[in-house]
Length: 106
Image (cartoon, rainbow, N blue to C red; front, side, top):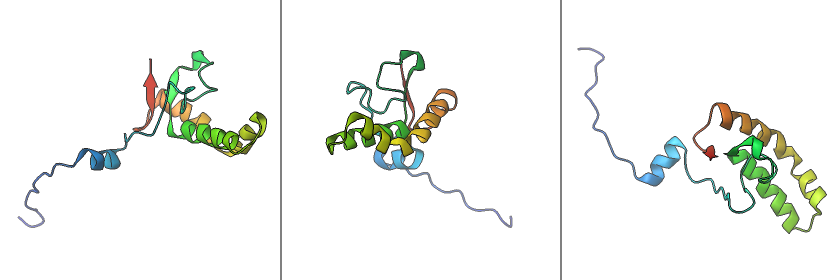
């Protein structure tokens, strides 16, 4: 028949390549380390649930990096402020329509 193609053989992908293709690579969340990557301020707002997102992780890492560079607690958060809207938005995504790298822990 015109326009038909021969079937392709399926090829298995190694686990690291499969994670690259479909997401779900380990983003580096560390719940035991002050809720690193958790949407919300540390682990104190339990009513938010335990949602971990790449955007919250980026914000947390920015705050921690600023603290390590000598910024005060307030200034560390001020310098990371540009990342906060994405982190807040990612909470709603993770809660209602999770992406492949979003994690919900009980």
